[in-house]
Image 1 (cartoon, rainbow, N blue to C red):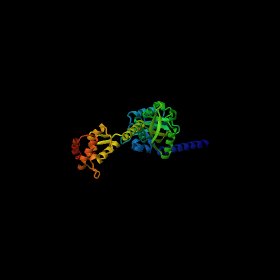
Image 2: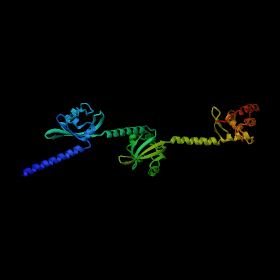
Image 3: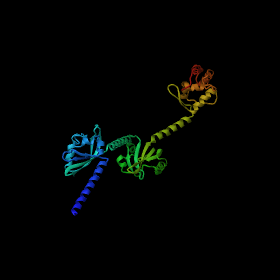
Image 4: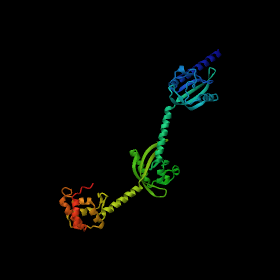
Length: 374
C-alpha cells in the first residue's frame, strides 16, 4: 500500500511539474521551441515563436530551423546543434529570418534535456532588435558628440561637480590651460590651479543652482606658465554614472578683449586730437572725423573768425573730400547744398586753407552739383 501511495505521489508531482512547464512554455513572451537533439527537427513551439517568425505551428512541426530558413547566417544551424551535443548555449547573439524575409536580432539560450527518454533541447530566443537599434543610435550619438567635442575650437571640459575632477577635456581646454589631455584626466581643476579666483567657481555653481545653466560667465583662468586668460564660460549640468557633473565651454577672449581696449584707446586719442582729421574712402565718403574737423567745417559755413588751426594734411583733406564740402555748402534750413551757399562756402574754406580765389571759383561749380554722401 505504501509503495502505491509513493508511486501515485511521484506521478502527481511529475504531472504538476509538467503542467507548470507547459504553462510557462505557452505564456513566455520569448520565442521557445523544443527540438530533437539528434537532428534538430522541431517538436513543439510556443505562441511567441509563431508571432516572431510569422510561421504557423503546422509549418514548423517536424522541420528543422535550417529547412525553415530561420538562420540569417548560412551554415550556422549544424554548428549550433553540434555545440549542443557537448554543452549549453547561453545568450548567443544571432540574426534570424522571418517568413517574410525580414531579419531580427535574437539572443539565444539552449539547454539539452530528455523528453520521454528522447534527447531534446529547449531553445529560447529573445528578440533584441529594438535594443540593438537603441544601442546603435546611442553609439552614433556618442560618436557625433565625441567628434564635436574634440573638434571645437573652444575649451570643453566635463568635470565632477563635487570635487572638480576632470573626466574629459578637448584640445581647446589643453591650449587654454597648457596641460596635456592625459595629465588633465588625472587631476581636478583644483589640483591644476586653473581658477585664479576660486570665488568664480562658487559663483558659477550658485548661478547653476539658481538658473539651471550658465552662459557667458566671465572668469580668469590660469595657464601652466602662469599667464592669465580671460574666458567666457557656459556651463550645463549633466549626470554621468549617477554623479552630478558639469559640461563647461570656455571661450578665450583675452586677445579680443585686448584688441577692444586698444581700439577704445585709439578712438579716444583720435577724438581728442587738436587737429582736424578727416578719413575718407576712395569714393570720397567720410568714414571718420574728429571734433576739430567738425568745428572747422562749421566755422567755414558760418564765416566765424575764430581760429581754426589747419595742417598741410588737413588742407589737402578739405580740398579733396567732396563729402566735407557737402557739409560746408548745406543750407542750415534745408540741410541740402544751396547754390547761394556754394561760392561763399568755397571761398571761406579756401581762405582757411590759404588757397587762391581761382580755386574757389572752380570748386564752387563742383560744390553746386554735390549729392549727399552715402
